[in-house]
Length: 370
Image (tube, rainbow, N blue to C red; front, side, top):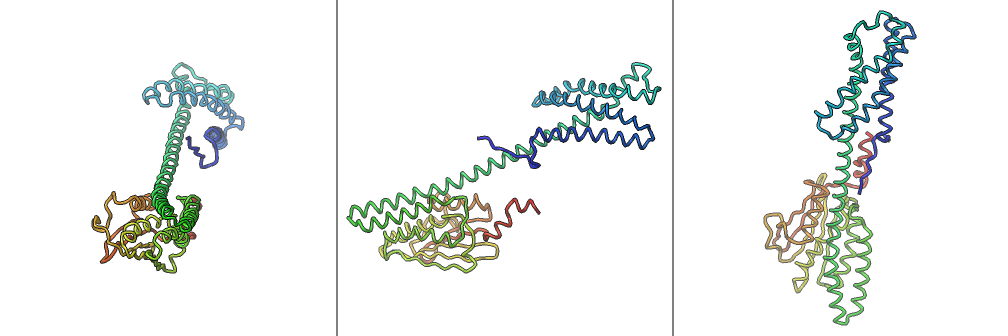
């Protein structure tokens, strides 16, 4: 899919060329006319610069098409092809202004071939300047376009990766829930199965409607998590106990949508489900300066595969995806760490503390306007 790259000035490349081309040659004529006044020459002498500038504007258009035809060729070949056209362009400019110049300076008539050649090279610096500027702007524009395309492509890949990580969790959770509903149906507990299907429908609707690129407040995240916990409470009843402890400043803090669900699901799977008496799940959040700290703690058997404070790279789809989402979104500013407690396992998330107001102040559009 092609990526459209708008010009920062709102001009197409063709429009930008004509603005610079005509503006440059008008500036050449204007400076020549000012020099006419500065050196006390007759007012009509400005027509020499007008004729020279008009000829230069026309001949450099031909050079433009030649340069475009040579684009991508080796520099040595481009130089060999352009030498004669550049000399011819300079000679045509001198010839266009010579007839008018002789009306004011009869002694300026060249007396021999050497003088004709010298006069012909009189405007070569102007032509070379035009060629240099054209090549410089062309390569700069190409570099900028490639940079914008690379950034756009990287952004698209970034979004696709986040969506892949988020949507990978849905089948993982869905399998466990449908398996539980199947068990209820086999046990002929139709009322509970029906209630669980309704809860599953509400959670999936919320999950599919939410954008994985969008960040939500912690309050909204916990509201969505409640939909999931309603399903699990049908399965575990009194065996599943949930406690929350959220500092007041953290309710409006932003975090990726459905970030906590795989952590809670993991805790239920390994801590609550494996104990006859069930277990306690505690969700806490507090602010530490410019960081938001969220912890999910259970009172299960812990994780024997834990290495230090970091889970092994291949440990669990939910934990691995959560860690990768934080890495993609926040880089080194976001992290997931785990540690065994005396009883249970604690997952600790660290990410920048941002609210909707602070995030809006850091949008690129606002930064560019400063």
